Image (cartoon, rainbow, N blue to C red; front, side, top):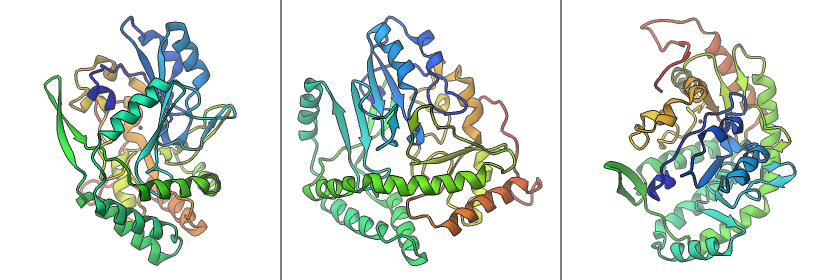
Length: 348
């Protein structure tokens, strides 16, 4: 979306059906004389195959932008993601207890300088942001019991009604819903530095729990796990599974059973919820409609709840309920049915 705001016209590359990341073998065929950059998204903390991607970029003299929003701490061939491209963007909302904000890194001093000037033009963050972040961070650090988990869930759900400074932008005659960016406060920066010191420990805890959940899910009927890219160390910021049925219906049934599963993204976000070719910003992009692998998998991917504080009993219950939903016989009007998504043209 930021690329559209900047006036650029994206061309979409289909995904690898196993890693769910951009398929670098399909990339070169989409490069044209007007192509200026490649954006690599490390989906769900799983690094892209940067070696192949960089070969194409160097052959055509293209800038490489790494989207590391979900991959803070992940590695590709022993090097942290964000070190491979010309520019990389990180989010602190994904695996730093949602302190907010993010980080831009680059080896180009002009990029850093212009970014600092741009950030200085942002309005300061409202005071209630700091209070919200303090409470949220304090509660998140105590998760692990029913009481604190319930408190954290309440805080997270409150975001739906929190003012976000939204504004409408225009691009090519299409209205785009934007979000005003705020300049982070000193307290936010202090929280961020504190959490970064514990990032590796937090990621290790997360990976231990992801491994346990993977072991319990891998033998469920029709379930496929997102494969980690070769020579990579991923971070399970999102735990994605491919299911044999319609993910919307599976998520609805899991939610009814008390499992906070999602369809690729949070309930309060529009990201990934609809297939990209149905979003008004990209409806006229032919490249989006040719991404057949993406279109066939969009309605089959489910995000299962997972955090560094998820208990073993909760992991067992998540896998048990998912298996129960998938084995449930189809019923027509009595309840939500599990239908095979298959190949389709409408709604990672």
